Amino acid sequence: YIDLTQQCWNYFVELMSNVTTSEMCEWKVISRPYSELRACLEDWAEHLNYSYPNALAEQYIFQSHYLYFHNCTLEHPVYFDPPEDVLLAMIIAPICLIPFLVTLVIWRSKDGKAQA
Image (cartoon, rainbow, N blue to C red; front, side, top):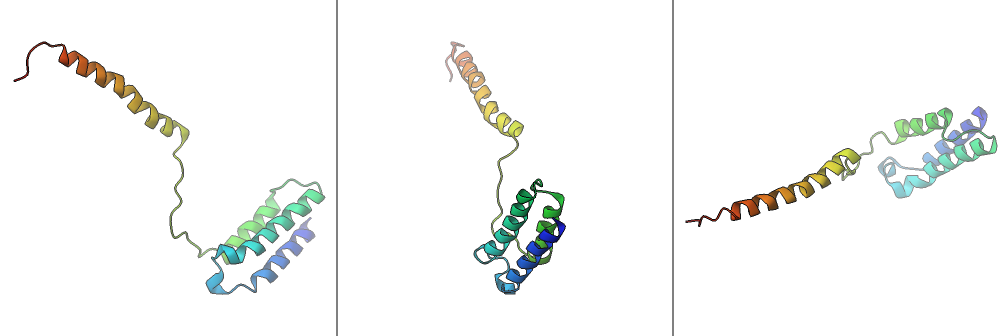
């Protein structure tokens, strides 16, 4: 598997040699070489009954990011959902406040004294 993954890497390096520096962070350009590397590593692992992802495959993926994509940044940050416990608290807190506020309004309106 080590020799086969090295061949996958060599093919990836060959494909990336055709990519210019200005195109290095454009997904349209790098998706094919990157997908080829991932598919090659995955196919050989499956063919040899190795698990995927595995340490060697991950090493090549990390190496590709370190050598080729380390200067790529997102123009627009990607936002993720908050953790479930925070999300649940954000949903339940207003729901629990509504009965309290309704009770407060009713209690204050039953006072019977006219507001001046």
